[in-house]
Image (tube, rainbow, N blue to C red):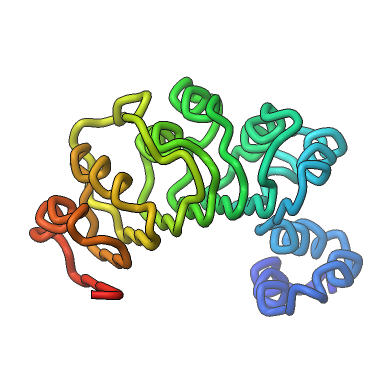
Length: 231
C-alpha cells in the first residue's frame, strides 16, 4: 500500500461511489483525507436543528474538515427561530463555491454580511428555488456576490416588492455563464437585474416576457443560447 503513488490513491478514491467513502477512509492514513474531502464535498441541511448542530459540533478550523465543503444546500427551512444561524453556517464554510437555497427563508441581514466580507466571497453558483424573502433581500444577495457566474431563480414565494437595499459590488459586471428565471413572481426580479446591467451567455426563461425585454436585449451581444418556455 505504501508503494502506491498518492496520485493513484486519489484517482481510485475519486472513482468510488459515495456509499464507499466511509470504508475507504479507514483503509489507511493516506486514504483518509481524500475520502473525507469527497464525502463532505456536498452537504445538505434539511432543518434548522441540523444547521445549529453543524455550527456547534464541527470545529471551525478554516484548514480543517469544514474546508472540504464546496456545495451547501439549505432545504425546507421555511422560517428561522434564530436567523443568525444561517449566516453563521455560511461564515464557517470558507471554501463554499455553490449555494442552494430551496424552500427556505433568506434572512434580511444576509446581504449586509456578504457586503462586509464576512462570507460568500468564493460563491460562483447561486440557486434560489422556492425561497421566501423580499425582492430587496433577494436582489441584494445577488448583487453582493462579486464572483457570481451561474444564477438560477425558480418561483420565489413571497414579498417580492421594493427596490434592492444595496448597490451592486461593481458597476461593470462580466456576463454570467448562465441565468435561469422561472415562475410567476419573476417579473420584478428580471426588471431589477436588467436595470443593474446583468447579462448572461445562456438565458433560460419561463416567465412573463413583458418584464424582461431589457434583460434579453442587454444579453443579446453575449448570449450563445436562449431558451424560452411557455411562449
